[in-house]
Structure formats: C-alpha cells, structure tokens
Image 1: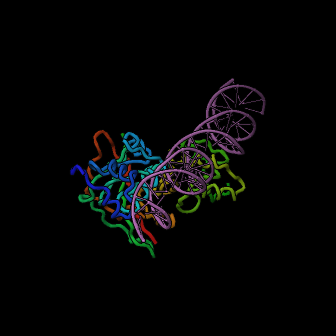
Image 2: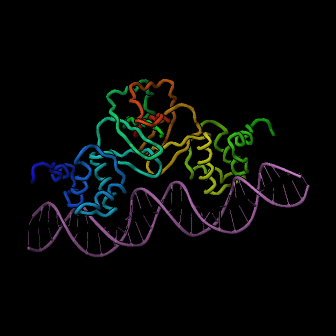
Image 3: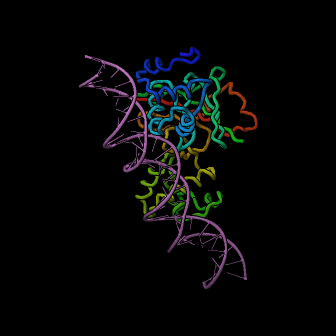
Length: 135
Length: 135
DNA sequence: CAAGAACCTTAGAATCGTTCTAAGTATTTG
DNA sequence: CAAATACTTAGAACGATTCTAAGGTTCTTG
C-alpha cells in the first residue's frame, strides 16, 4: 500500500465481486481521477496500455457487473453503442451528436414539473434528461 | 383515389423522396391511423402482411430516410434497438424497461427549468426526457 | 411515348457491438 | 494446500444494421 490510492479490493468485495487482477485494473482506470464516460472499446484501449491488459470479453463482463452492482450507470444516447458513466449520482447529460461526446451536468439546478403519473402497474425507475446539441 | 386516405405520393415528393411502391406502402402502415412506435423488424413484419411486401433492407433505408426528412423521430431508449416514432411534435416518453414498451406523453404540461447553457460552440438540437418505469 | 439517366430495391454478404462457449487459470475455503 | 468455486480468455456466435452489386422503377426530355 502506497497510501495514496483507494483500495479497490475492499470496494469490489463490498459489491460481492472477487477482487481479481483484471477487475482491480479496470476499477483503477475507471475510478481513479474524476468522473468518466467510457465505452467498452475505449476502456479496453485504455487498459491495454497498462501492465495488466484485459480481454475485451472481460471488459464487457466487468462493465455489466459494475453496472449491476451500482458502481456504474449505463447511458443510452445513440443507437448501437453503450456508454458507462462513473458518476452514479443524480445528474443529466449533454450529448454532442456530431461527435459522440457525452458530458454530465448536475440535476440540482434542473427542475422538471408536470410529469404525468407512471402508467398503471408501473413504478418509477429513473428520469433521464438528455440535452442533444450539435457543433 | 377513394378519397378517404391521405395522398402519400405528395408528402413523399414534398420530402424529396420518390413515391415508390415500397415507400408508399410503408408510409401507409406508418401514418394511417394514430401515432405509432415501430422497430425495423416490427414494421417489416407488418408490411409483409400487405399486398406489397418490402425487403428488410428497404425497411431500414426507408426508416432512415423518413427520419432524415423529418417524417419520423428516432428514439433511443435501450441498447441495441432503435424505435421510430411517427409523432414528430414536441413530446416525451415513458419507457417500460421490463418489457420494452414505449409511450408518448405531451410536453405541454412538462416544464424543465434551470438547464445549463450548451457547451461552447454547440447549438441545441433537442431535449429528450425519458421516464423509465418498471412493472 | 421512347430512351436515357437517375434513382430505388433486393438478396445476400459484410460489419459492428455484444454475448456465449468451453477450456484453462486464479481465488477462496476448509 | 487441495478441493470447490469463480473468473478470464480466445474465438465462435449472435442480433441489429449497413453494404454491395445487380436488376428494376421512376423521372425527364424531346
């Protein structure tokens, strides 16, 4: 322990996941530093540059597991490609359609009034606001 | 002309598209009757039941052309599947995550306040609100 | 209305992102 | 430290969508 990096071993274990070399390597890339948006491909490219490269299948598995464990949030903004967001708190997104960039913005300032009640027999899961812009 | 069905020939031409047999058949399925949400597969299945069946490739081409022409709106709510909405006016969506159903709701009642300004050098394209619910 | 030009449709192949399979490897448990 | 369990992997498989190239349709022009 150098003392300056979070211990992903414990957070993974807390999420019910074995802290394997691969998952720890991915957690480091994802969660060290500020909030990130990644795709499976982009994360795979990043982790390949590491001392602990990980197969693409494991990147997919891990993203899904982290999402299921609440460590990541999946954002669907464009057909045929999933983004994962390390920010799991309440917030919304700008999506720059012309180049596929995604940016967070806090939901604190945003008020949504007048939403209709959910259809019979359903309960609210989440409200996504996607502000689409172009360059 | 029987006089009781809209003339898709003129609307297609107005959109800069030749009114081919296939496009007219698809327009009929899409735009006769109330607003619809379709996927390429579901529309293909519907049009196959018609006197003018259309290949799947043409269904994809046509959906994209209609979307580009502003006749349809593409809604991305779930990874790996695109919905097209015949309602191109201002409105938002309920998405029932547990069974893939999509429902419109008017944006008239809904007020969104406090949205941040678009990032430098971009202009607003659209604001999507997706209310995700589960059964 | 004929003929050419432009455009459209099609089946099937190709591609893309993602998931599955089966075999080997790491981690945990007793 | 051995058995039990879970994980990783390369490559195959998959589902949705796009491409290709060949033939058919629609439009324009005279």
